[in-house]
Amino acid sequence: MVSMKEIAKKCNVSVASVSKALNGYSDISEETRKFILKTASEMGYLPNSSARTLKTKRSYNLGVMFVDEAASGLTHDYFNHVLESFKRTAEERGYDITFTSGKISGQKLSYYEHCRYRGVDGVVVACVDFYADEVQELIRSDIPVVTIDHVFDGNIAVVSNNSQGMEDLVTYVYQQGHRRIAYIHGDNTSVTRIRLASFHRTLQRMGVDTPDEYIKESPYRDADSAAKATGELLELPNPPTCILYPDDYAAIGGINEIRERGLRIPEDISIAGYDGITIAKILEPKLTTLCQDTVAIGRIAAEKLIDLIENPKTTLVDRFTVDGTLFKGASVQQLL
Image (cartoon, rainbow, N blue to C red; front, side):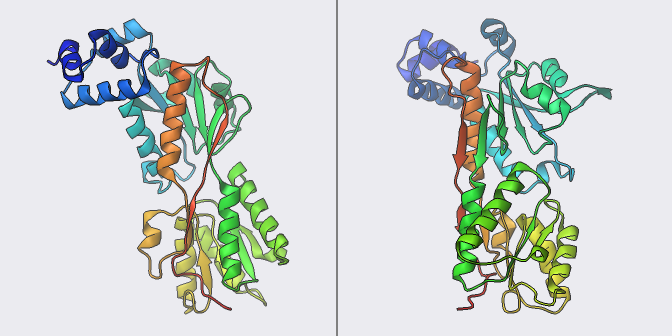
């Protein structure tokens, strides 16, 4: 087994520095700590987790609360990339991750109780009903928490720039000559409210009036519901020339409905999605969409949670906003 002395010799640092890096102490530069951890990993060093826990009073285990109403789990096209980035960053910093739920061996526990049972040092919370009592209990607890795409006062949050993202998407559609633009938005969440407000604000600034019948609601990642809403829009006396969807997966439902009616994309009707999942660039035609930076979201969430755990007195409690990028694809026809 590789010893700390061997790692110290390889890195040309003291054994004390190696010990500090491996045990998460803050009185060592970030650059040196990362170098030592990388070298230790390459040399095959495996710490004694029980001894480390006794010494540092930490489990080096991060909880992940991810409760998706559609029960898609890690097949969730957007959040699985966020969580993969979170996991990768956590492991680079010497932490494992554990998914938290409301049950242990069939016994019902609150999220807070589960986190205590698992002994996690902190929790990242994503894709949940943030207003549920059990979630609120955890947020208000003494366990360090970072939320993704939702902001609580007094907690660190990492959020996509949904306002700018929707503005960029609507502006592009407008520049392509579209004035009859419909929006099938997701269910009532803070993300939806931000995107919907940006949609209306951007079109209002451009002098475009959006009829109420052009606004439909459909749950996120629900292709069947999105297909139904698409059909209702296409049957209007004055249908839209472009339909925006709550996410790329929902857009697939819209595509199916459009093609079942014998219509072509984008010649007869233009569409655009949101998220920038892999399939958007595989579809024919390629789907115009707003690509969220899932790598940055996951990385920042992990970094801020670990900073909060290791340096609670100096870590800034703030909202960290991550910009997305527009993928123009080929699903929006130029009318002008």
